[in-house]
Amino acid sequence: MIVSLIVATFFFALNIFPTKFMAKIQNIMVIFLIAALSAFIVFGLPKVQSGYFSQPGFITHGFTGLIAASAFLTFATFGANSIFQLSGECKNPKKDIPFVLILATLTVAVLYAFVATVAAGVLPVDQVANENLAKVAQTILSRPLYLFFIVGGALGALATSLNATIAWVTKPLIQACEDGWFPKKLAYLHPKYKTPVLLLGIFYLVTIIPIILKIDMALITNSVLVIMYVFMMITSLATTRLPELFPEQWAKSPFHVSKGVLWACCILSTVVLIIQVYYNASSLTPGLLIANITLLAAGFIYSFLRYKTGKVKMDISYEDN
Image (cartoon, rainbow, N blue to C red; front, top):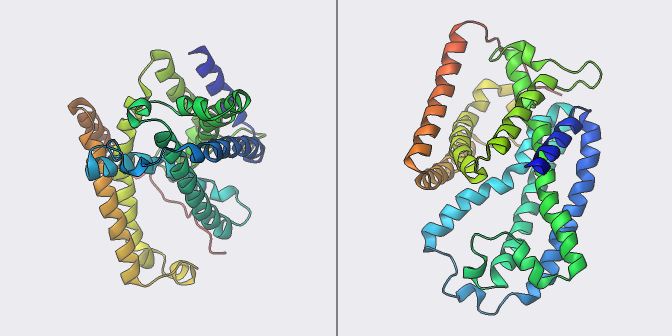
C-alpha cells in the first residue's frame, strides 16, 4: 500500500508541471514499455505450443466467452481516445489528433494480439488463466530480460497508464467548469504552470482512497466500464447531429462523408457498444448493477437540474482554422 501511495503521489505531483514536461517523461517510459513487450513477443512466439489454436481450452465458453472478453479488452485500446482531451495543447490538432488516434490504436491492437498469443500459447491455458504475464515471462526469458520485462513492461504499463490518465482526465472538466456545469473555482489554474491544481487534488483523493481502503481494483473496473460504454453510446448517437450543428465545419472537414455513411458508422458503433454493455453488465453482481444504474441516473438528474438553474452557458470550444 505504501508503494502504491508513493507512486500515485509522484505522478500527481509530476502533472502539476506543464504538459510538455510530463510528455517527455511519458515518452521515455513508453520506449521502455514497447521494448519490454517486444522482448516478450520475440522470445515467446517460437515457444507457442503446436496445436494452440485447437486445444480444448481455446476460446473458453465459445463465442459468448470471446465476445465477453472482447467487450472487456476493448477498454485496453481506448487509450488513444484520450488524446482528444489534449487537443487544446497540440500544435496542429487537426492533423496530429487523427494521426495519433489511428496509429496508436492499430499499434496497441497488434501488440496486444501478439502478447495475448504468447501469454496463452506457451503454457497450458489452465496454468495461465487469471494469472499475470510474469509466469509466462519467467518461462521464456532469461533472468536479466525477465527483470527488464517486469520493470519496463509490467510497471511501465501501470506507470504510463496512470501518468497519461492524470494528464487528460482534468481537461474536459476544465471546459465543463467554464461552461457552468460545475463551479468555475474548481478549474483554478496554477499561476505559473497553468495546470488545474484543485481538480488534480480531487482526483488524487479519488485515487488514494481505494488504495487506503483496499478496495478491489477489479470491482472498480467492472463498475466503470458499463457507465463508460453507455456514455460512449450517447456520444455515438450525438455524432449524427454534426452536419446540422456545425454545417460549415463539417463541410470543410477532411473526414467529411455522406449523411448515409455517417449514420451507418454511428449506428454500427452503437450496436457494438450495446453488445459490450450487455456482456459487461451481465458479469456484474446485482449490487454493482444497481450501483451503475444509480450513478447513471444521478448524472442525468444533476445535468438536468444544473441546466435548469441557468448557470450553464456553453462556450465555443472549437476552432475553424
